[in-house]
Image 1 (cartoon, rainbow, N blue to C red):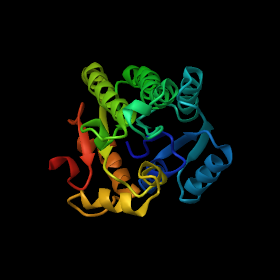
Image 2 (image 1 turned 60 degrees about the vertical axis):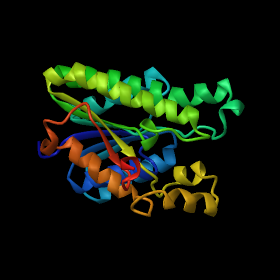
Image 3 (image 1 turned 90 degrees about the vertical axis):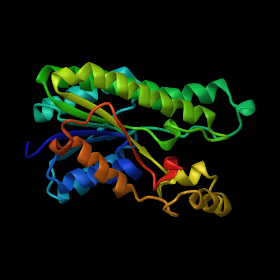
Length: 249
């Protein structure tokens, strides 16, 4: 399909924003979503300035009514849904297990796990009926390994990878592919928060990466564009680590 319809949650910053711009360069029709209307409208305008058909819709992935409305509005506008990128996520509160709260667990899992589940539910509802589609969930290297001080975030990303595998099995025979991408440290605001904004902590983390650097948001975006394309049409149920070699150690 020359102009696929692409829906991106959590699209207003970082990897989500880079992904929207990457799909715009491919000529896609794009719906971006998030919770900051002014930023979302500005991004949609920027995408249109790049000759992409684009719209912004406010949605909080923790609420099913929002997710259903987002998917249905996308289909109403463009007639179908070819690609969905479930990028909305949070790192939650970083700290040792002994200091974790029920509130942090709920807030992190509601965004990262429930948000992904609800997005899959309504995206697959459309894609299964149309007999095609590609969904890419955003995991993390934390979906495959542990990190001290980040148990809740790590657990939530392990759950995202489990959802990805199960959804892929449910969609495969109908032509719906579901994969996930697991970024390593990427030069975004989330990475700054994850390392506490401390230069020493950031340098120590990057020193543990074989590539010896943080990734760029567009490097993740390009992987997502590939997974969404027909070049990956026999690829489903997989988690692709884009991490400078971190989990190969």
